[in-house]
Length: 372
Image (tube, rainbow, N blue to C red; front, side, top):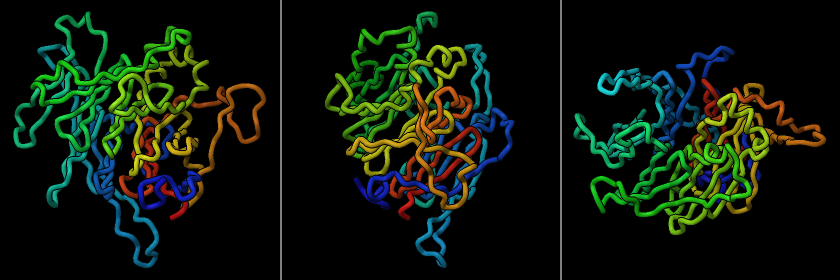
């Protein structure tokens, strides 16, 4: 595992994190438009972008380190805010298009200017040329001629970090397709198809819903990809399509609660996931403002909480544990006490340093490893 400064877990693999900053209002009644819907660091980590359900993008810039305290980390402060998307109505298809920002991607920096892409689509994947602004190139289209025949939607897409002709996209059926744009302009045929066989003994009414993939991310090395479904994070080797090489359970204690989660629509929540800079650890969110970290080499994991109660400068984050049943220990929280209205759907890990950003409704929390 890489130590501090290498984008790995903190020194000693102890997952020791402390509070750094929180951005956002303290109001209990949060407007729907103010809920953060995506978080993304740029390639250097000096800029951090958030998008919200109101179509706004906020850019935070990391301040220079304090000369008086040379070992202190620079804070992130608001650099720019703009309206990226407005609500629209497609009169041809009689379809409302909401302004929510689903995804932000920074472009590699070529000069002093910074560029990012933001999107709000789910049946097609379009490729844009930055110098051709009036049209895009459709590379994947799964929309059937008759919408009544629609059985799946695209849930996430990602380009390979080193091979510009290769990309993957995931679906609501729990499958991942890897495509090579060199084979054809319209990638209606995949090069590789990743799917884990279902265990017939665990089949239930909810199986298809919880197998839907909500996020897919290539590792920085390009050797692996990570997917997130409702209950777990899986790591796949691109050379092995039949099954993942790692499966990390995020909140398996919720399996017995799927019926109530279906009734309150939480089962349809879309959790994202992210790699640290050295690909040695992964992070994703859960409920009760909990988020989870997994060390890939030691197989250790930890549950942490984004909370204003522990938002004092340099305050250490205490690991949290959930009691699924039986006698509850002193420091554990009962699964029946979890607040499903508080959820961490979006997280980001700094590409170099041990700094993470966690979005909790309309608040953006920033944490750093305790070692620094």
